[in-house]
Amino acid sequence: MHKIVFLDRDSLIAQVRRPAFPHDWQDHPATAPDQVVDRLQGASIAITNKVPLRAEAIARLPDLKMVAVAATGTDNVDLAACRERGIVVANIRDYSVVSVPEHCFTLMLALRRNLRAYVADVEAGRWEHSSRFCLLDHPIGDLSGSRLGIVGYGALGRRVAQIGRAFGMEVCITSRSPVEEPDVTQLPLDELLASCDVVSLHLPLNDQTRHMIGARELGLMKPTGLLINTARGGLVDEAALAEALMRRTIGGAGFDVLSKEPPGQDNPLLGLRLPNFILTPHVAWASGGAMQTLADMLVGNIEAWESGRPTNVV
Image 1 (cartoon, rainbow, N blue to C red):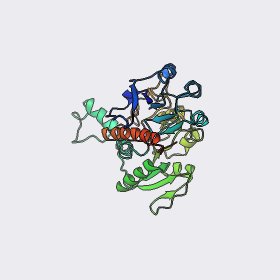
Image 2 (tube, helix red, strand yellow):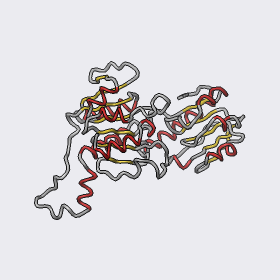
Image 3 (cartoon, helix red, strand yellow):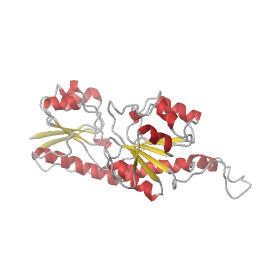
Image 4 (cartoon, rainbow, N blue to C red):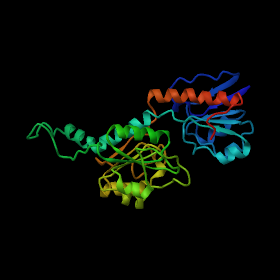
């Protein structure tokens, strides 16, 4: 009988049905790194959202046969160590193709229309003392007619492009693979950064993508350009971004992710109180519908592996 251990069950607010085969299921609301080995003793299947599974822990878990990641990103799992041991790692794909793109456009619209500044003005009582019917103290821009740059053109990038076109935006992309679509312009990263009004990141975090947006790349962007990141915090050099925002060398940024989560107080973005910066706590993925889809796919991955037909293998 399989022993299944969910290391961070409280990270998923959804109904998780039990797999349709004999098993022993254990839930833990959260798991600290030094608790991983003890909790996974005797387990053949580990479920983790963000709890790290590093090589040293994997080496001490002889019964482990599968890691079911309750997310798309797998940078918290040592894939090389799993591969060496023959441990199957499966992740969740395309579950948030509605939730994440909608969050991207929430950030874009709020920044382009200076929503934070206008809300602050109303809360401060400035509208009541206005000499006219409205306040016009902050510039307001439209998405329509602007150029949207998408870095990474998987399922999420394609959905963002679709919504962008509905807003009347011109879509440009940077992708490792050639894309032959009539309404998409493919550009090198530097050219995309320099020519787009909004740049949205949709890439996994790995050695090739870490800090791919640094001081040099931010310097290429338009002074009115927006940078949106709902992918992984480590894609961007956070100190360089904080500097660019404070100096207003770019128009603004909307982030849902940071390089370390939860962040430490030393994170340079955490203390920014600027109208041109919006930070949300890694919730772009977390609509109720998206989380339920994730939960259903998670158990589906486990059942597929147990039946000998694994799916979504990393």
